[in-house]
Length: 231
Image (cartoon, rainbow, N blue to C red; front, side, top):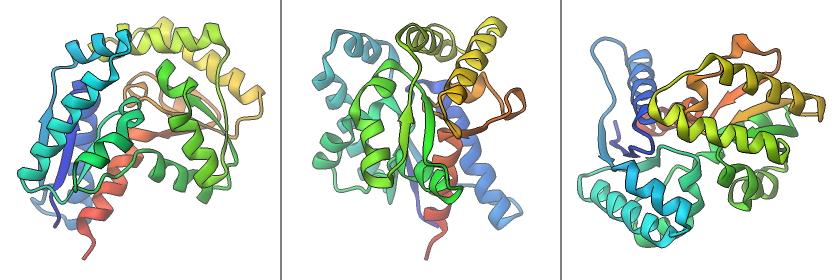
């Protein structure tokens, strides 16, 4: 079994979910008392979030590169960044480490393509919804069109993530708003909804809506299990 590196703490709530899914996946595949071989570097998200708001992405990148190098030294065979937004920095991180990165968009897009979904709604932080690093990879590499909420709804989605979900708060009124926003994306022609922030799955579940949800945290971890068990 290969050793999985986790670059986490972004936030720790979603990293915990990734850790759980990884271990459940290995136990399901191998049975008994088996669990995943994992090394983790968990950052302090507080100062990183400040740097993000200030647009100081060089400082954020430095922290994540340091963490990835630590995973490499600790013996990881490949690594995951346990958040969608920080994949904005995936190219610069990959330039500074030799450890292979499992990009979070790829397993999600592969599942979407496998279900013949060519137009997907995307929920995430403002960075993820509005910038090209995420939508561009879906379109350019997988020919998947992306629709996003309008500006006011994007602000709602982003605010709930940072002010509630990243703090471990699940608020029923926010869940109602997310469901409304998902329904609006469905009305725009979305065939499925990408939960493009690893915390959103804590708030909205498949049973809450009648359109397919694609939880990136779970799909990312499930693909990592497959990679870890490959010969």
